Image 1 (cartoon, rainbow, N blue to C red):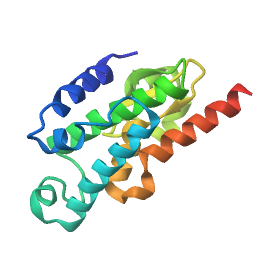
Image 2: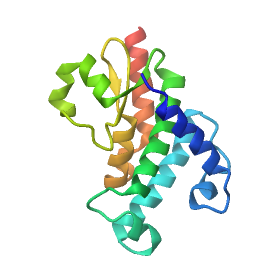
Image 3: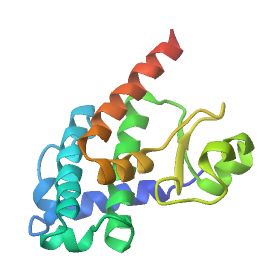
Image 4: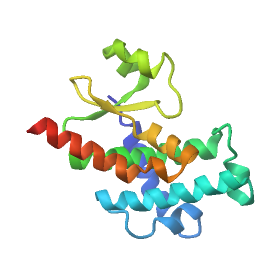
Length: 169
């Protein structure tokens, strides 16, 4: 298990206090660890997606498609993915913890079939439980940046909550 995503959540909190930044201007209000706060994350990610899809303006230069890489993109994925994962964990995934990719694969070798053998930006951390159930909030953020709103993190969290309720029944 790892505390790195928790440290990214702390960084997220610090960055959102800087109202002069693009990040801070989006997250001054409404980031309260609720499921509804993920709608703000969706809006932020949609703006980034649209920016690099247009390939114009500052975000077009920072987030060209393809490839989706670079330190700015990694920061966005790490910070928003950690926030999304923590919201999911707090609201619907009791018993789930963060695992570095390598630790997760060593405990769940059958997952190599669909996760591969090396960590990617979206799989660097896995949110999982002792039974081998998992979700990939970082991968969902990467997919949103590529595909747009069809990969909503809010919808993703709602689906995780619904699945978790079925399991409890």
